[in-house]
Length: 291
Image 1 (cartoon, rainbow, N blue to C red):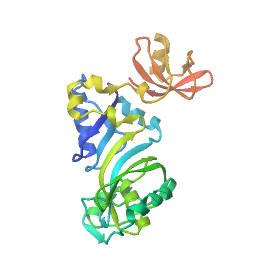
Image 2 (cartoon, rainbow, N blue to C red):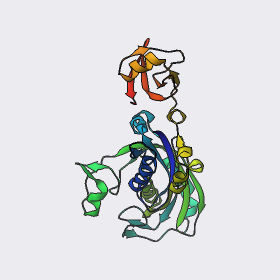
Image 3 (cartoon, rainbow, N blue to C red):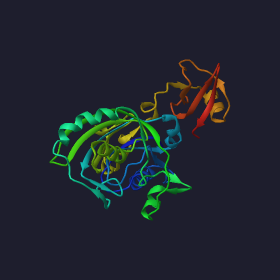
Image 4 (cartoon, rainbow, N blue to C red):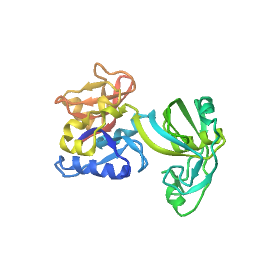
């Protein structure tokens, strides 16, 4: 069992809860009645949208994916800041909103295009001395967080909602915190702010319109599983019986025709995926082997 699933996560459950359900679905298809699964980037419980999940031995391929560009649609609420940076938190600051903020706001968004510095929020999954920041935050503990550099590729206004909210779409690098972006946008405007609804539209090659709910995946699990070659752009080579046996045993083999670049997917004579190889001159060395 190996592949990736593009899951639509609804608002409410945690990413871990969704992954657990996917693990149970595909575990029933395994001869051992169990399998592994892991997501490629967590979504907050109140957020919805794309949650890519690696199934089976595909979890070992996650490090090969590299940074995943993300895209979101979100609501920025102005005039109120919260302890969590989203609508679920207690109010920490309030102020009146200037009458002309909607007129001024489009010019402010241009400041955030390109590389920017962000301070990770306390309500995040980052760890401090082995503990998640959100666990510390729930205990009222605040720790110092290093600024991190992220990239905003695009930030577009989709429309204003009432007198104190605006809906936006952002394309950004991995590691961008949308709740922090909301707070920083509010600071640039001169008012407290927090994040409202959040929808992830894309995560690397995984896009919203191709995502499936857990129920849809449970109904047709094989159809929902995408082969690694369709997600990771490595070429595929086929080894003969002796070559695939050597590769499985961890031995380097002669580079077969069609191999180029740094990494290739390796299949045996039956077209079963047996691993990922790394090219070293005229030799193909096993990097990950699926027994």
